[in-house]
Amino acid sequence: MNAFTSVPAASSRATSTSLKIPMPCPAITASIACSSSLQFLQSRANPSATAKLFCEVFRIGDSEQSADEGARLILSGAKTTTSSLLWEYDKQGKPLPLVGSLSILEDGRGKPVCIVETTWLEVLPFQDVDADFAVAYGEWGDTLASWRQHAWTYYSKQCGLLGRKPSLQMPLVCERFRVVHAR
View 1 (cartoon, rainbow, N blue to C red):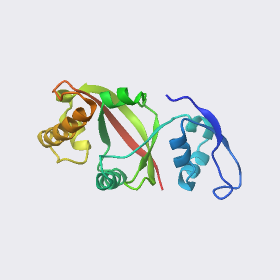
View 2: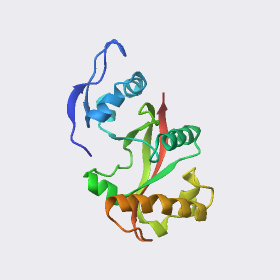
View 3: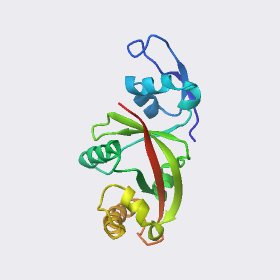
View 4: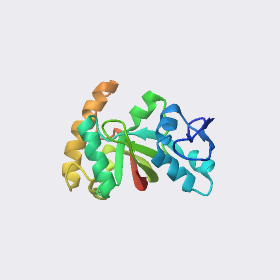
């Protein structure tokens, strides 16, 4: 998890009370400052403890269009898994989410869309991703073969950007999640 600092999480526009909630990073602080995220925090029994569960702000894909489509699929419930190269986390010095972590999903324009909770996480070699995970991915077809074809193309490009070679053993951070709050 990220280090936390105490910052005001509520503005006078969003709420009549002011909460001092520890936030993990400026990007999360900015996203939580939107009224929908504040409403979520304030609805929790312990807003400060809930705020500590936030681990990242993220988008699906590598373009505005793919981020919008990914957000649509997640909000509809069609997409309940995602993956990333472990090497991306390593390069960014970013810790992996933990089961129970909360993340803010943004659309292609950087607007918060929903908050998701990690329900399962495992680092797997590309070749070990199973059909159940691939189908729950909600994109790239509804078979393991189709997912592998699209994922191979996508991760080959990502490997190139990282100076790595794609292989069947390339480590993927495979995550299952559920929407816990939508704007």
